[in-house]
Image 1: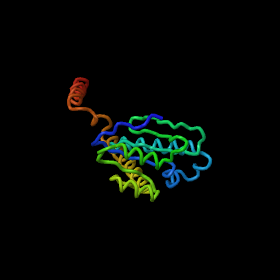
Image 2: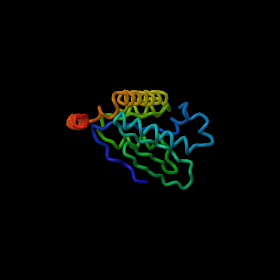
Image 3: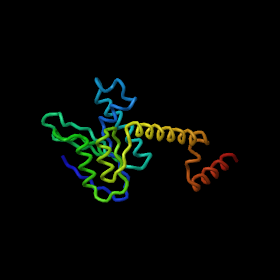
Image 4: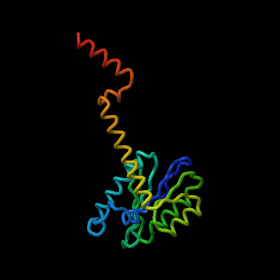
Length: 179
């Protein structure tokens, strides 16, 4: 499994223990036992939107340490890496290893409700948020995005989205058609 992404010193990074989040968030009630793949896909979608709107990069880690013969994999997306650890590696261990390899990156947060993992992250200079805190942040971000989209939509459609030069051209065209 290829690892060790190049981290930018002034980048914003959020490591997410995927199964820990799925087990805590209310959005996943009823999906975990019979529709785990759907739960993972929903989490990816929610976090990809969150990463784009909050201008940060997410490393979403699902541990596959109980899957025999699994060599691990990384799926890269514009705002997120989705990591499936190899057979003997837990998500916690992967996250700790990545943070140790990052060097002097200033803004690193880990989302997990695992108390031991939270203490390790704090000792290494990172920040931590619980699964519940991340859930609230994602919902707040989604709500703000929705409100902004509605605000833009209600103010004369796409006319406001144009730059000044195109607005002037459109006004000139409208005047010519009115003649």
